[in-house]
Length: 386
Image (cartoon, rainbow, N blue to C red; front, side, top):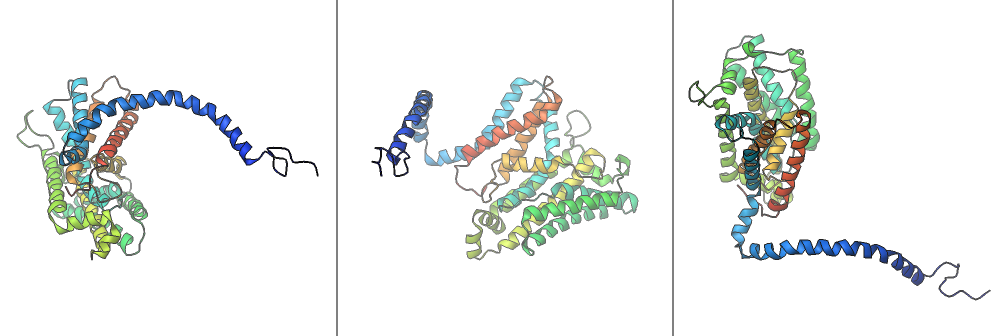
C-alpha cells in the first residue's frame, strides 16, 4: 500500500481537522460581513439601553409591575391621541356615542369570551349562537304570535342551552373545546337557516322589547341624548357583573386557577370540568344577550350569523391583555380592549383619504402591532386577578 497522504484519512478524503480548517476559512468571511453591521447595531441598541435601564431600575418594583400591567391602557391612550390629532371629528361627543354603540355588542360577547379564555379554552360558536337566539325570538313573536316576555326569555334560554351543550360535549365526552364549539357553531348556524327558511325579518316584525333594548335613547330625543343608551348600559352592567364575579367570588378564583395550572387545580380539589362547563354556559348566555341587542340595534333579523362577531370578541379580549393560554387577564382588561378596538375601527372610518377596501387590512396591521406591544410589556407582568 502507498503511504497515506498527510491531511487525508484512509479513504483519501480530507481529515476532520482539515475539514474544520476549511469550513472555518469559508465561515470567516461570513462572520466578517455580519460583524460589521452587527457592531453598529449593537452600539445603536446599547445607547438607549444605557439611558433607559438605569431609569427603569430606579422605579420601585411595585410600580414597575403596575406599568407593565397597564400596557393596554397606554395603547388605548396612543390610539386616542393619534386620531384626535389626525381627524377633528374623532374627539366629539357624537363620535364617542358612536364608538360606544358600535362596541356594545362585541363588549357583551367579550365578557363571556373572557371567562372562557381565562380557563385556557376557546368558544367558536358565539356568532352562530347569537344569530340563533335572535331568530328564536323573532319567530316566536312574529310567526307564532307569542307576546313578550316569552320570546325574549326563549332567546336567552337558547343561548344558555347552546353553551351547556358545548360544555357537555367538552367535559363529559372529552372533545376539545375547539372542535366542540366548532360543531356547535355549525349546528346553531344550520338551525338558524332551517328555522328561518332563508327569510329576513325587518323592523316592523321585531318585538318592541328587542327594539327597546337595542335602540332606545337615554336623556330625551335631542342631540344631547345618548343614542342606543339602553344597550350601552346593558353592556356596562354585564361588564361590571363579570368583573365582580371574577374579582370577589370563589368561582372567579377557581377560573383563574383552572387556567393557570389545571393539574394543580385538580390536586387542590377543584372540579375543573365543572368550571369549564360553567364558563362555556356563561359564554352561551352572553351570546344570547348579544344576539338580542344586535337585532334591536340593526332593526333586522338575518338568517345567518354575522361573521365579524367572533373575531371582534376575541380581538377585544386579547387586545386588552388576557392570555390565550389562560390564568391571566380579567374584565377590566377586556374593557380597555373593547374601547381600543372600537376607537381604532372608528378612527379609520373617519379617515376620508384611506381606501375603504384597505381599511380591514390596515386594521389588522395596527391590531397586530398593538398586540405585540401588549405581549412584550404586559406579558412580563405577574398573573393578576383583576
